[in-house]
Image (cartoon, rainbow, N blue to C red):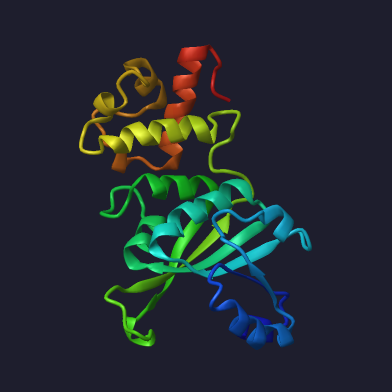
Length: 222
């Protein structure tokens, strides 16, 4: 209702059939369109066809927060910005920087597509019933272009390295990426093979992917 009060055109996506009748009664008179759908499987391009750009505002359950955000960043370019409320641990992973306690593969994946920042904390006391977890507000702003040019290293190439690197995150990269990245690629990328996955940001992963491609396939990085 607060969003509609700003004059914005609002489309609400809700999967809970028990809530939908009440939601429609409350917000449809304000011009809000209520769509019964699962955000993880709905046809987003069709849903958002009415306008070229959108902002997503959502309260996301823990089990869908990360996959949904990544799916939307990868597949729905019409969404240029997101403001999501998520469980604190999930939010900290979305915004984490290399070397920090919460930094992981999802942090790198988010930074490939967007910048993310923690913009607020939500006390458990504002919910009824009161949950046993804290929540945070995370703002995610899509980059005009991905952090790594696809001509240098594609998202799929980088993701392959992330899965292997963070799959053995306590190992040195020369061990966790063995069979994927050789010493020559580490040297060409200027990355110490003794580093660990959580020490590298998206730029370093991009360099590693580019040098791996160059050495394996003879395509020099741009």
